[in-house]
Amino acid sequence: MSTVIISSTQDSASTNIKKALLMKSGWEEQGLFLNQTYYKNTSFSDIYMVTINDKTIIHEGIENQIQKYLRIRPTEAIFISRHRSKTGAPSLTTHPIGNFGPALFGGKNNTVSPPMPHHMTALLRLINDNAKKAGLYHKVCFEVTHHGPYMSIPTLFAEVGSNEEEWEKQKPADIIAQSLICLFESNTKIKESAKDIPVLIGIGGGHYAPRFTDVALGKNVAFAHMIPSYHINDNNINFELLKNVIETSSPIHGVYLHRKALKKSQQTQFKTWCKELEIPVVSSKYFTDVS
Image (cartoon, rainbow, N blue to C red; front, top):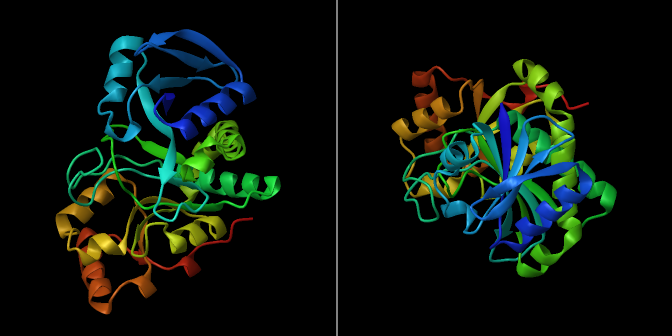
């Protein structure tokens, strides 16, 4: 069971997060991977950090490269990255990866990668707590599933957004790094409690998944893939794709519909599909509050 953290030399936010990780935890240089030094963590077992020289979202097959050249078989991947948006609003985000349509930014058409629901939801909460303690002004949220690369192993992205000014700052990168270290410290607890925490697919709403973020911060649930309204409105979601999303995220305990963001006809369609797939449509009132 090895976790690999992946950084990119083409990404200043990624570089700053990597720098913070190296400062905040113990690492040993192991040699070179793609002409960049790679590291093994000395504080936590089986955690490695590698660096690539191209964009993270288009670097396909890195898990296979790591296994081939480093003789390490990664079972989970965490990409540390920048986030770009038109508004440039400061943000700290985490999300699963995949495409609900054409693969315009890496990955495969109409294909999602296995998510890390329990770790991703725990990371969201840690980022939120650490950002508040540090007095950061950044919005902390999920993003819905989007972009590549396609990964055969459970994967998440942790990002600093959303413009060059924010990417160059060390403080937001420090928060992502500190939150990842806290995540590794909690790894055993997260895995032990996973059987008691229901995993949900989120459907509906905008790119920054406001409803799913609120539910994840307030309720004892974990989110896997999240499908935004814009893909539904563009008719990119069909029964087979939903089935694939659920199977890729297995085990799934329910589908959470952001009802206010969906038309009645869309709600009806998803309820019909979920019934056929024998997956319940759930409400947040079914779940206990985060203590």
